[in-house]
Structure formats: C-alpha cells, structure tokens
Amino acid sequence: MMCWASRTGTRRNLDALGRHGWGLLISRAGVWRVEEWTCPATGERIRFRIVADNGAWSDFQTGQEFDEEAFERFLIWLSGLSRPPEWLVLPDMVAGGLRSLELSTRYLNRCLSVAPLVLIAVQDGMEHADLAPLVGPNVGIFLGGSTEWKLARMADWGAFCRERGCHYHVARVNTVRRIRMAHAAAADSIDGTSATRFAVTLPMIDAAARQPDLFGRAA
Image (cartoon, rainbow, N blue to C red; front, side, top):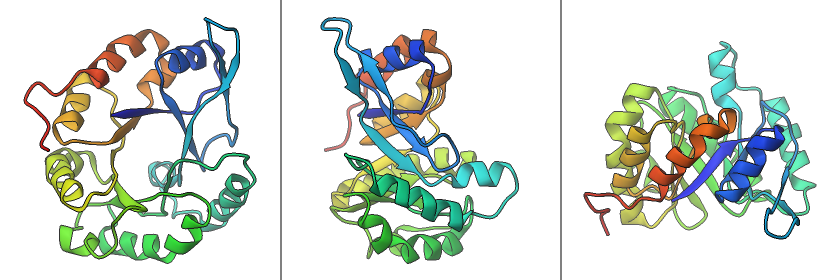
C-alpha cells in the first residue's frame, strides 16, 4: 500500500518521509512545488514521487464552492512539470452525491491529458452502479465523502475496485486504526497529514501501513 503525505516544506519532515518511501500529495489549495530529500547513504538529492489533489476538501472546510478557475491554473502548472503526477483527483463536491459525479465526469478527458491515472472522488449518495461504467485501468476511486460515510463504506468500495481492477485510494487516513481499515479494504494507497506535520509519529504510522492485514486481504 503506497502512502502519500500532504506536501510540506519542512526539511526534517521531508527527509523522514523520504527515508520511509512516502510520496507527496500536492493540493491545488496548497503550495504548488515539488520537493526533494537527501539520501543519508549517498548524500544524493532525490525528488519525491507526487500525486495531485483538486483542493475540494479545503474549499468545503471554508464554505466555498469548488474553484474551477484555480483548478484550471493548477492543471496548467502540472502540465509543465518534467514528470507528471502519478494520479490526479478529478474535481468534486464533498458530500455532493451525483452532482459531484457530474462535475468529475465533465473534467475526465481534460485531466487524463495531464496525468496517466485519474481518480473519481466517491461521495455520500453515490452507489456502485453510478461508477461502474466509468472506472477502469486509467480511472480509479478516491474514497472521500463525510467521515462517517467513508468509514462505513470503506470495505464495500474496496470490493468494488477489486472486482473491476481499478486503483483504490482512501483519503484522510491519520490513525493506526484507519490504516488497518484501509489494509483490510485492500486499498492501493492512502494519504494523510499526520506524517507531514509530526515526523515523530511517522515510524509508528509507517509500520502500520507496511504490516500485512492480520485478517488477510481479499484476493
């Protein structure tokens, strides 16, 4: 399970993330900058692997509508990078149901021109039948939505992704308990802010992320 941390410019935290093999999630709502870390064995400067988030969660927290103009500027910036993000979250509306899905599908082709893989943020009110015609090798699932809904449906959406062979990402995973839930749901990747903000917590969180699910992940 690949782990992504929200982008940070703090050198101590960057070096800790790099040593543990974490990548960086760059948000449209944050600082648009790639980062490097120093390999302790060789002293070499190594660029982090990156993925990109649309910033909708930040808009939601501040009570704003999704900022499409800023997102378009973000796409232009991403297009200019020497290496594209490994995946990009399509625009969405937190807890927006099918209105969110309509917004995501409108940007599908535009975002696939920037990244090789795009993720649809599934939200409260969406069901498997709504996403089944859309997912595939280049279109995966980003488990968003309200916290209560996300925790209740994590395993269910994991089964959906396994059946269809698409990438499954679980957002906002900041505790050992949620990491274990993501493992059990067979998530391909997770992200969180805890490892970014507190380097001291990283070994514990990373160990939980690397430990195989004790109950066994479904094949």
